[in-house]
Length: 91
Image (cartoon, one colour):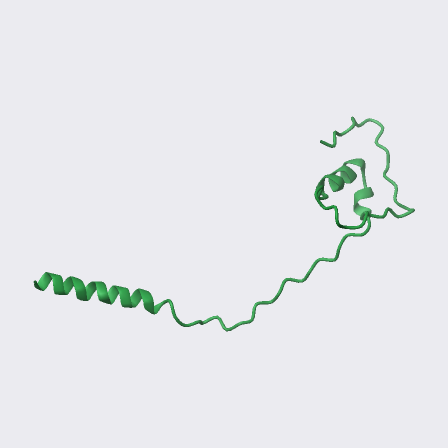
C-alpha cells in the first residue's frame, strides 16, 4: 500500500511540474511583420552580363505566376553574343 501512495505522490508531482510549464508567457515582444519585397517590373541589368546570366535569370522566374504584369526590357539592354558557346537548353 505504501508503494502505491509513493507512486501516486510521485506521479502527481511530475504531472504538476509538467503542467506548470504550460502557463505564463515570457515573450511579451510584438512580432515584427516581414517587409514585403517590391514586385519586379523590369529585367535587371545583371541579367545582361552574358547569355548564361540571362538564361539563369529566366529559369529563376516562376512559371506559375500568371497574375503579375509582364516584365519590361530597357532600350539599352543588350546581351553580348557568345560566338563559341553551344546553345543552352531551357528545359
